[in-house]
Image (cartoon, rainbow, N blue to C red; front, side):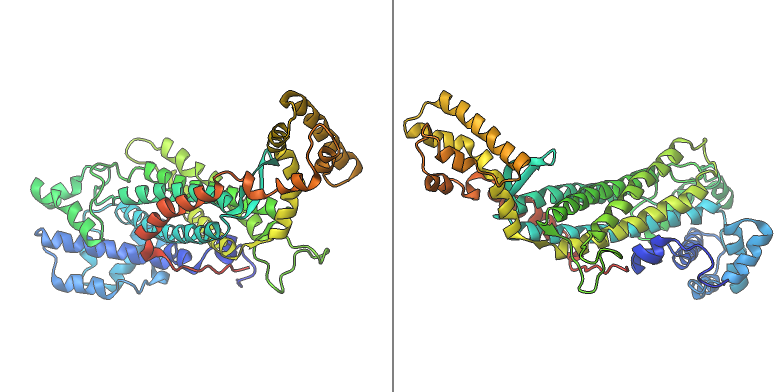
Length: 478
């Protein structure tokens, strides 16, 4: 078969980075299996079993050169992937053949590898998430004073600033980072627990020596770079672990979706745009178009990840007693593809956040077109100071606002509320005096101050704590 006559996942072909693809690759998986077999043999030797240095050395000599053809041929015969790879490893290591996988069950390599792979994948996600936060922090600081029309219900509302709006995206990504780092810090290895989690095989191997058996899991964990193993299990680690991990990814996806939706709406308003390359085509038919392709892709992949989080949740809920195998096929899909998708999402978020284009003139024009409605309270107070009656002015300004609104909606006119107020003797204010009240910064409240304090007192501290992760740049494939 050629490379073009079979299905290839777009997650690996179009969206995910090479780094994330390697973490979930066969090479990573089966090399980790062999690391685990070496760690088990070393542990058993250290605890007194008759395993030689020569056998260990032979295992280490073939730790990475997986003989895939031998394993594939054996799996056709035995229909068991772990035993096929035990056989293949034994072919390469004839002196150590008899002690490979000694006392272990399939989940010793399968589940411990899954934990190791998820941990490394979470570390890559963490790195990219920290860099998204850093890029949005720079953007928020740059535009903290840029007044813009706020929206509630996507209807014009009290002004805010471009930077303050970006802090709303930032805050959600910070929550995701907090969740990720907590879950990542709590992940443990399965260790070697046996067929139902009772370590019965080791009781036989070590002739009932309880103290020695208690040392097995801590030694294995240390050799693999982990502090500990889960203290109890069935044959597998609890599938609740997968649920917690995918929930973290779904949380990041939700934050990314919100960010991308806001960018898409702002691009429609021509206020803020995602990057658009010189030779990029927006539409095959409409050459003038600048579609928010990156943000749309973020939204699309994010929905996939949010829904994908249901897979491990349902799998966790439906496990039977100490082990059932209806998790396996699902895990092979849901865990890797959830990570590959979130990796692509974060690369896109990095790319977009690093290249956002702001159009202040458009922002100011739209804000000023709506600002007279929002300034009516201030205008009314100025008119009272000039000798007007507050109750009468309130009714009059309501009527004039309705008239100006009709002029905009029904006649296509510009907002002429200021002109209407200036022409009404009840207000005793000139058009020039009214225009002086139209300074946007008077209506953004504490947006700029809130932004600066948030960036200095919250975001900067998080970035300082994670500074070793900074410096990632993202390339998007297509």
